[in-house]
Image (cartoon, rainbow, N blue to C red; front, side):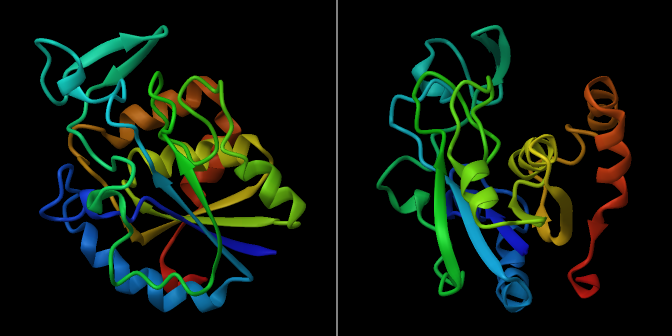
Length: 211
């Protein structure tokens, strides 16, 4: 079963939002135009409590984009974004959700951040996405959304580790900061963890026209 996973296409990641991804709004019509090509469409979204540990304002003397350590892991501190029940946490108003069968919330635990749609950053808590996809008989997983260099990337990495054939849809995604989070850094990180994933991931960058 060919499945599309749409990640974090939410208002706070749009131009004018609290954590804007450059040109984040431009992927919305692209995602809408290709959903009919998939047997199953699911989505993930950030759903943070107000006192989430990743918010800079919850750490005295810290600013957005500072780095700290939480539970032994490096943590970037972010502006408040995608707080539960707020307008910023909603999906973009023009995003077509009619074909979606399920939505998975992440970042709900105030004590740890969650970039991946599958697990928190410490792999302590599952969103339930793996079990859902396997119950559905998913064989191919195509990923897109925001931000390409953070949440989409880590979702693809976890999906591969869970045994799915993964494909990243480049023109239906946008990075937060392609200069700061370089491709070289990502390649080095992947090489330490899984050379096989690195080879497959770099070969699996698609344009929507190739689906």
